[in-house]
Image (cartoon, rainbow, N blue to C red; front, top):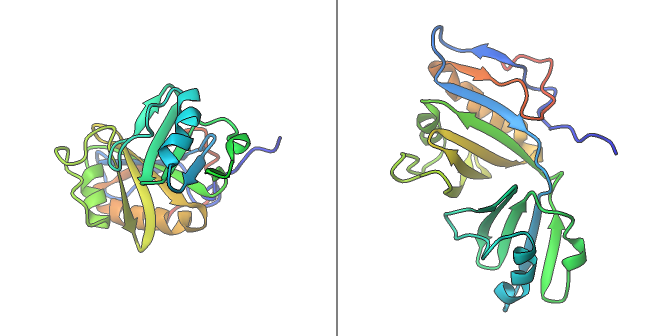
Length: 200
């Protein structure tokens, strides 16, 4: 099977950028494993329950807090819609009451961390990203540079940003330009293929 490449694999390269000295931000990208959306209509929770239970999930989380079970993460992005990463092939669960959609090639994950990561997020989106308002395990749906994104807080100062693949370069450029005053480093792996062009 062919290896999936990040839409950013020609755009970014590992290294340090911006101001000299300590870096306040780390940027990177990672592969998304098994990203599916399940959706429905009236009775969605009942139809989704056995699918979620098979992955060790209870209810798919709330509208602000992700639910995790092992390698599976679920984000309830609407009353009748849940995004699930780390899922097996869910196509067999499609029915009159439940629609499954493979989004594995439609999203890109950008990783963000560091002491200034929250400051960077608050420069780019009109949401309170302070530690008190946006704790590990929480997620928000917002916009960066007029592009809808999902930001998941994965640690005290670390985040995954799920971006539509066609807009990945636009979001990367916005992060790059706003991170330069803080100083930032591009990580070299996270199962990504990052190469060639400096983000200048």
